[in-house]
Image (tube, rainbow, N blue to C red; front, side):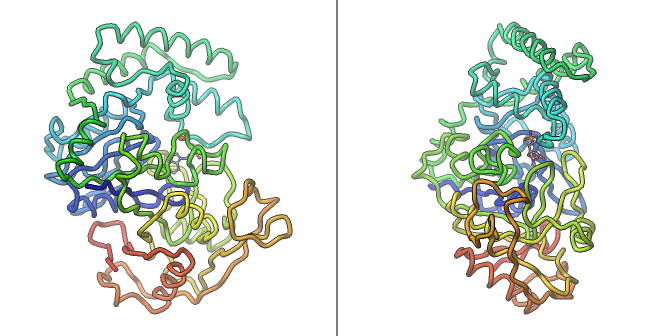
Length: 423
Ligand code: IMP
């Protein structure tokens, strides 16, 4: 049975958590394949709002198995807090949440290194969530990392000590002013590791292989967005993993010819949190309205998100790099009330009109070229069928489908599970 993928097509925060939660009823297994607690996947149902960071978004469904894949980086401290927040739901975590032995561990010193690196960059900082993601993936590719499977070995504390000591020397090298009490951080870390060790560790690639063989339906859940991909994103203002479709193969051990549908999620407008280029960013009342109505604050850091119009040039790029077969448009309700909707369909790049994403999209090189469409006034949040949508929104959807050459299968009109229109 093929493995379907669900990916963010912008700079993250597209609403992946909500859609995975909505789609889980169609799947046996939900598997996260990259990223770590820099993600904040928000789910709302039965009047409850829940934010997940490392745990896959299928965890609230009775029958789904949730896997944290080898491509994910895990901070035991944050993981333990996530588990505690789930306690009220009485979920059988031991059998429903399985963790890859090959997933890497975020150590307290990885977080400190992240802070030291960002501080040393001054104005050029990435705007990292400071969860230790970059330094942990650096240790992974540098072949120095610690993995979940190491926790089953008797010498894991010695391994930990050697790596943490090395990190301390690196922090000194940065020569920046960051205050920390490592003994306190380690105390919390060791306690959290003990909590983590109570969970079920698996050889996830083998588990998933057997699951595919026996016809189980699997959904791979991406984190962040395609434009934050380490290779294809707006480097260096990116995260440290492959957020695009290929990341699901390396982050789960799923063969490329086993990938089925590639479901791409985008917001009806664009947001970005942290530093880096953003051609359609608005600095006016329209941008302020999107941020306010869309409640655009980071689910992990609480930082206000930068807002702007939809960028078809960037979106098309993400559709191509991922091989998207179905689209999902989120937060259409936030655009209700705008007289005019603008859509960036091309860039003026160093004086030339282009429709592809170039190497360098800094503001001094790129000016967006917009098409305009009539907006709609109706409140969408109580609508449940495609034929109820205002004709202007239907025209917007049709325009996007034509430009992107992929059908839009879901239109989300609010944060709750129920506010989801299937087309
Ligand atoms: P890091 O991955 O925490 O180091 O952050 C690198 C960049 O990716 C920063 O600009 C972050 O704001 C951004 N980023 C990381 N994770 C997310 C996410 O889940 N949603 C949106 N932006 C993210």
